[in-house]
Image (cartoon, rainbow, N blue to C red; front, side, top):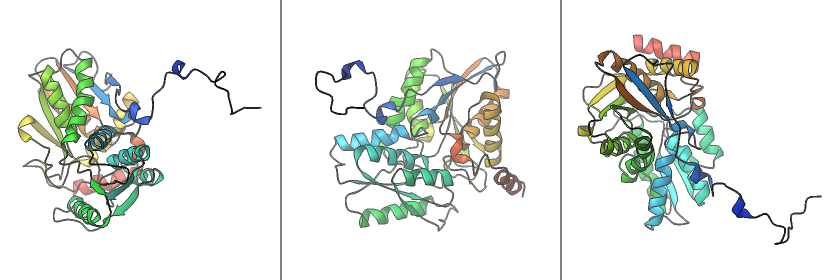
Amino acid sequence: MFNAGLSTATKPDSGSVRCHASLMDCIGRTPLVRLSRLFPEGGLAEVYAKLEMMNPGGSMKDRPARHIVEEAWKQGILHERSHLIESTSGNLGIALAMIGRLYGLEVTCVVDPNISSTNLKIMKQMGARIAMVTEKDAQGGYLHTRIEKVRQLLIEIPFGYWINQYANESNWKAHYYGAGDEIAESMDRLDLLVAGVSTSGSIMGTSRRLREKFPNLQVVGVDAVGSIIFEGAPAGNRRLPGIGASRVPELLNRAEIDRVIHVGDYESALTCRELVRTEGIFAGGSSGSVVAAIRRLIPELDRPTRIVTLLPDRGERYMDLVYDDDWLESVREREIE
């Protein structure tokens, strides 16, 4: 019979067990892989992908969720009674719910109808409270409406703390010390960084760290059709979460981005499906966007070029979007109109 009451003399030596203290210590050190089937050897492009979906919470948002909470806790801004509040399309909400469980903090996620049902279920299962907004803003999206709801909740909820990923400096710093540092350690040469833009934290932080090692690095931002982050964007209705925005993030410095490529939902979804067919990488919508953008860049290359990109999240969260045939057909018909 199992005896839970081991004496001190018979207890195993904990020093002999190699493990992480908590799930938070599993964040980062994601794999960097060469996309050799989509972009075979012999061509001018040598393409590498940082698999940020391999973070324990399923996305790159684990990095800022941890860094923002840790820094605020160290500074005394957060305490045991704090209540985290954030506007989110899914991934940051999941990451905050995960970090909230470990810190013992309440979390409220402000979401809108475009959120994938899977993301919503995960947040709820992780204990996050959900505030759903249904009224569109003047830009035709929900971001401004979500932020107004956050401001309302800050008044109503005692000890509420707004994560504010669009303006919080700890957002880009999480990627500077995270994926940016890890890629810099892994490479001896790099020509192009191609990354999606939403809050702009990942592209700003990653590129700033990489340019310290590779001063001639060119940075290509990938935005969604219908987004207003960059001037001159083509009009359209965005349905994929996690890329693009209906407001310009405070963290963004456009001068640090050399070029912007806009990709529509349909092209993103088709490229996601090709990514899983060829590379076996089951990724989310914005991963299709960045790979599609790389495809557009390759015909312009005039010399061997090493490219790195970030694949932000997992594909199973998009089963009712990117990987649903009816959804894909509805997007195709809408973009044809």
